[in-house]
Image (cartoon, rainbow, N blue to C red):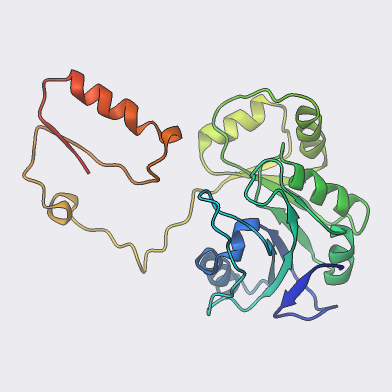
Length: 239
């Protein structure tokens, strides 16, 4: 594959499952795949971006996590960092033919350009079982050509993975009729163990405690929370 670099399994090696995830270039994102391979015995190969940029435009170099021993192919992408519009700058069908996977899972929404690209490459090569991921919990209508791409992916997909029941409901409402499983976001319980929340945060039990875990960006609505708290009389603490 022109422009691709491969670590781990060499050309012609068999990958049981190909996981297409551009964010998998970050080594900590590979922990779950290493654990999955160890628990199931699957041969998991990752297809990642070799020039991805995160939400803060920082370049993400491709590195391997110590416990992930599967195949790791890094492909250049156009529009790196743009979640819905990025695309692989190479012939994905050649990679599929070379690695001969039993199944392909695209860790991306059905309306995205790269999802459509991988599904089309599979149609033009081995036509193995293929599925996609979704975390979209709102019923949105996309403009052409994204709406047409989404419908086509729905028809071609053998399965889909939703991160919550509400996401699964959206997929059904939008016309996906294939096999659908709800798989919540993973948590590494070796690193994040249950503790007494009040003790861990050293709270003095105010009348109202609100916890938030996530990025401090406008789309998360933290400003709305702060404005709402300014309107209530109850003493509150946000952590």
